Image (cartoon, rainbow over all chains, first blue to last red; front, side, top):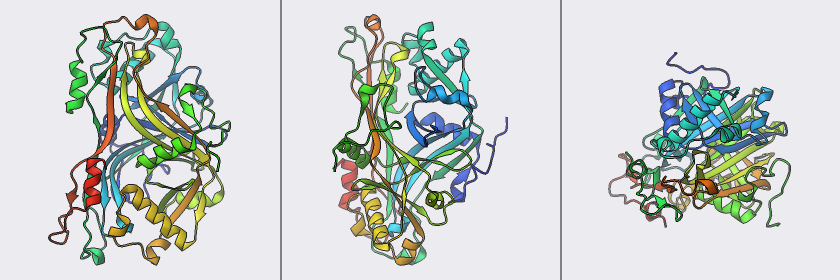
Length: 219
Length: 219
């Protein structure tokens, strides 16, 4: 498999090209770290963007939803979708308003998703979705039965026509602004986990699983 | 102004309708708290979703970019866009894989953006964008000059045809799963600020501004 994603007219980064790349491993790393994807599709009545959970299996992004879902069921009609996954890393405060920015890592992918119909492949998708949410969880819950698998639509988007964009580091003011007496710098931002909150209906004495505590500790 | 957003075919929530609302104030609250919007548009070669900074001014969402930007310049052609703003609040661990979820708050808006051409209105948009990023910053940086304003495309999307979706609280397993010996609960998630990192090129002795420290403290 090529180390590089496929560069097309849609994925060519025209603004701040220095922030862009087509490195497959860089895309995987962002996708594996983030938790929410924003999925855009043509509803036939204009574009719609919605947040979704997802997972990566090899070189495909897995999305899922209720089989009764209005728009997931439209995937058979062969329209392209776009998936954007973004990690916010910091607020970039420059001396000039104009040069303010954010540090971020994002992936934008395009393509035609395929419907997954094989029950075993759907089961594997469920597993990937849970392990992406919280590694270790799949073996510590009741796994889906045939009815649940049938009630779930699973689609896979090839992660090929895609691009990566990353901004990092300090602000970049114009030379003429460097002597201004304004504080410049970065406020780091990160999505962090808090202390797990047990469901009041848990069976008595069930400890918080180690994998859930590890999340909090950033393990 | 109506307290309620406009419900149309596009904004009607069909899945988990109990999570949906059309409350304008609820939408504002989510929009004002989040930092990144995912914007979907029809490029003419399929849908594209990209991450953007934004601000809210009254009942409109402000977006901006370089005047030379390929796709921002396409807004004059009258195609609808969609903006989705999402806050992730927690990972919801249920006893069954099928009932896993996330706690989140999101807004999805649709509509036709208008190009802002008046320099004073563009300047006000800049101010809103900076104050959204970090309240207090606008008065503590060099404000945009005429050349920078001319080099920036500003668009505004009416926040009217929009919906809100919120999931909160504990997992909801099926009754038959409640006695299973799996730990269930919520891992809270939040985007948090770290200690501000001063630019190495700052003028000597410049303190971190109070508004930047307040961000860290959640003020």
